[in-house]
Length: 175
Image 1 (cartoon, rainbow, N blue to C red):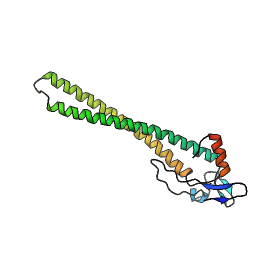
Image 2: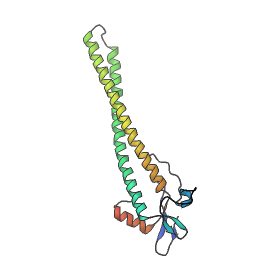
Image 3: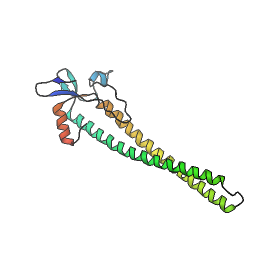
């Protein structure tokens, strides 16, 4: 939505397409943000039609949050690749253990001891994989929280072009 003003324009931030966020429409009106009190918890820039446009500080915060989300996404992607690689390694190791068990000489104690030590190693790798999964889930949870906050506070919000340009100039980044 674009409304021409004498010195500047009001723009509407587009829906953000993030990895784990489902875009939805969100209005910047105070009533929509806090319908029970009819007052906004945030101080928006006034427009001709009343409160509703993001301020330069709000835009800077949105840009900062988006930057943090992008950085976390990179970390999550790297963790996912490592997790997948290690999962495949464990699957291959499990296949090798199964073969060695079938070929195990049950009368030779040395053979049984070697197999048991391999099973112990496999169990250690599975424990490490569980820790990796927990760490990944924790990172993903934080990412999802920030992405939801970005969606709620920034996506679909009106703003003035001059405020956005100033925020981009100050941060050196864009939305």
